[in-house]
Length: 129
Image (tube, rainbow, N blue to C red; front, side, top):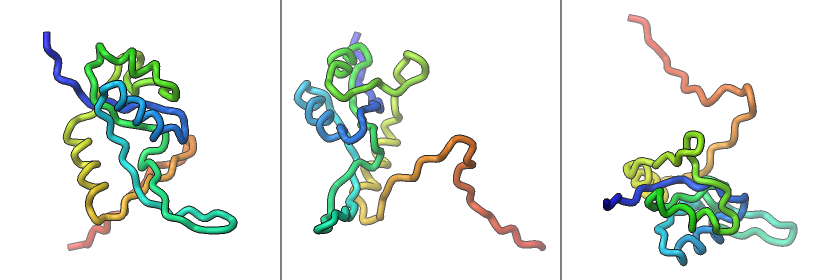
């Protein structure tokens, strides 16, 4: 029974995304860590740095049956899913993220919402006839 590997989102420890990506790659998994450039300001200098577009997450292509060796990587918390069942990410979503990251468009993370805070709303003007 040959199952085609699918993309999954991994929840990883904060600021461990790059380390986990390298470890996953060394175990033979295909990883995708979308990054964006941000100007970091320190007390003595500023510098452009590449930071994760989705902080705390990494995408990895795998067969769900092979997930144990991935889950043993230091920094991996769990595979995102519904209950205990990993939920695959559609290939088209991964391609769209890749396209956005490699385009000239400015991409950056969306700020987290607080509990009870409404999500983004887009006002639509309706003209009277």
